[in-house]
Every structure is written in structure tokens, then in C-alpha cells.
Length: 286
Image 1: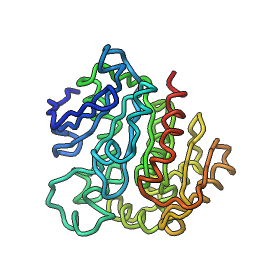
Image 2: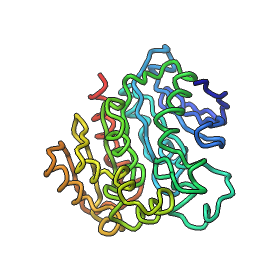
Image 3: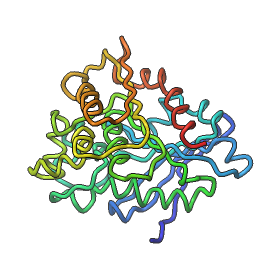
Image 4: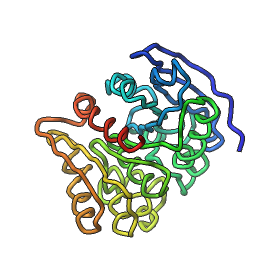
């Protein structure tokens, strides 16, 4: 399938490499889509092919959030990791309720392909992330070695990283999550998003729920790495890491779940643990 022309929005020198923001017309979503890339110095200076870490951001975020706030580029430059950060939903559409609340619609695509109307035509983030985006990056960034691809995410993006890794076996070398929504079928954020994007059939919801996927027999061959702050205001109602812990214990899925006293849901927490995640992924793609 042909890829679209990529427009450079801006490009910035950073830790010997480059942070760039880009736009292209997406056939998956029927809208322009943006993404950010950190090209490490190994790629920027020599053209060497480097592994890619795909980062999925959370509710209200966009393609700029991770690359600005996570302080990941210094370690990524050391490790020779290319960082890829897509936007969190299609934008600019005129659909009912798309901008009425912060936890649904625009900036809240939940990394799935909607099946209910009127969302099904454009909210196709799983197809975009796992297909068109990767083809576009492969065509536009010759240094991107997508045979050495890993995935991680935060909150809604942590949900996306784990479910996409389970739903696309063999695609990703490693997976990790920061304060993820582990069982969206069982929490208010998921009820709102899944009920609208996917309709009322909860068996369909289960296909996009990490805990339900594990219980249905899906496995990731390596360990899941998850970090969770214990001062996170969403911990008890929306995130429920104990459900993931129980599911992994019951199914034999390897899991490293680390809980951190005093840390909340934001990017100061992410800055604190991001080096561990980058090294986890770098070790999987050597």
C-alpha cells in the first residue's frame, strides 16, 4: 500500500540527534495525522539503522507530549533508540460530542478501531498505529529498523501498548507501561469509551482489554514491565493494577510491577522511571 507524503512541521537539535514533528494524510483515519520522532545521533550522523521505540500517550495528550515532557532523549541518544510518538486520535472532525469531554473523543482514541457509528469511519487508531504509521516511518526514515520495534505507553497509552502487543504477536520485541488502564472493561474510562466506540457487546470490549486478553489465552513472550505511582489520583477507580497482577499470576504471564510511594499520574513520575524503561527496551532489541 502506498504511503502519503510527509510534511515536516519543525525540527530541533537535541542530545546530538534531532526531534522532529511531522504531518501526513492518513487513509486509515481519513484525516491528517501528526507524529513526533527523535532520531538519535547514531542515525542522524552516520545513517546507521537503529531500533525504534513506539510511545503511546495518554488522555488529553498529543504527538508533542512525550518528547517534550518525559526527558527521554538523553538516554535514548546513549542507547541509539529512535523514539516514535504518534498523536492520540484523529482531529478536526465534526462528530457529536467529540470535544465535549476530556476523556472521550478528540485526544482519546484508545488505540482501537471503532465499530459503532459515527466513529467507525475515522477512529481507526489500531489500524493506523500498527499499519499505516509504521509504513510511513519506514518510507520516510531509512534509519528506522522496524524489525527491532518495541512499544510502551502511559495511562490510556499503557492500555494501548499492552493490548496491541498481545493482539499483534511477533510485532513488538518488548512492551512496558506507565500507570496503565489495565482493565478498561471494568472501569469508568473504559465504559465510556468502549460503549461509544464499540457498542454494547462486552465480548467485543474484551478484545481490547489487557486483563481479558490474558484470561482468553493471549501471552507476550517476554515480561511486561509496569510502573505505578501510589499517589496517583486515578489509581483505585480507573487503573486497578492489582487486576493485571492477578491475571498474570493466574495465566503465567511474566510481569514486573513496581509500585512507587508518593508519585502521581504525571510526567514527573514518568521522568523518574523512564530510563529503566528505555534500557528494558534497548536490551530486547540488541
